[in-house]
Image 1 (cartoon, rainbow, N blue to C red):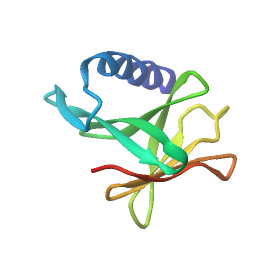
Image 2 (image 1 turned 180 degrees about the vertical axis):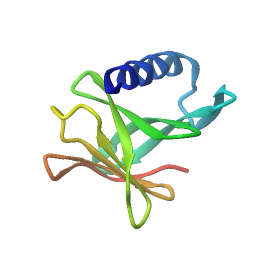
Image 3 (image 1 turned 45 degrees about the horizontal axis):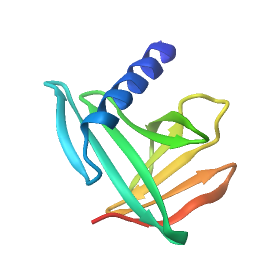
Image 4 (image 1 turned 90 degrees about the vertical axis):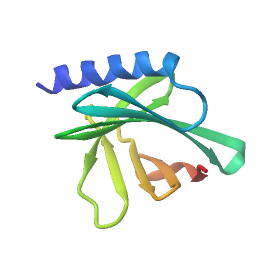
Length: 117
């Protein structure tokens, strides 16, 4: 089932990358969910592009790192929203709260100080 979930998320991300503008945009993917692309401005003049996929049952985030689209699934969090890589070969975590975000890899901040309007 996880392979199917990963394939579905990657397909949605590919389609949405060409369809969604560079600013935060929400579009209806179906009657059961929505897609949103958010572009964060981060420290060191870096950007972090994230596609959020929200369905009636689950929430996901898709990031582009090491020239790959990497799907992450939401995990329980006391504050904000935290996402963890679905593929166990990756250690990426995305932590978001309000308009702020940071990307973690191997327990270290890879891209930090990210904000969006």
